Length: 73
Image 1 (spheres, one colour):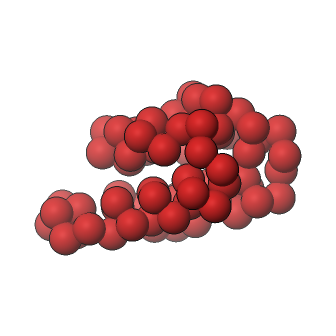
Image 2 (cartoon, helix red, strand yellow):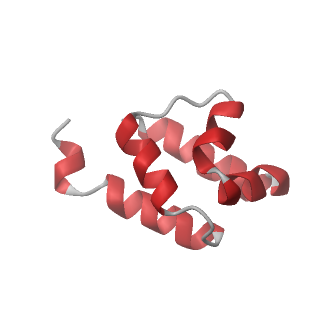
Image 3 (cartoon, helix red, strand yellow):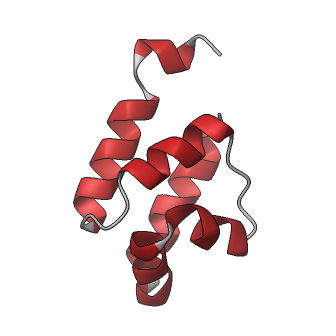
């Protein structure tokens, strides 16, 4: 997992309304369309928080990926 990538995705979503909307519809495809590479775990977490507000999406992704089981990788 790359925290740099996660932070870049969150930053882009904060600044770009079109990307933010795409992220809410289909987060994995939206991220990949921008050239971001996500691990399978990141893809699953992103999908779990699709259709949420940006704040809920960011909070959920950050909390889930920061869990102890994620840090073992």
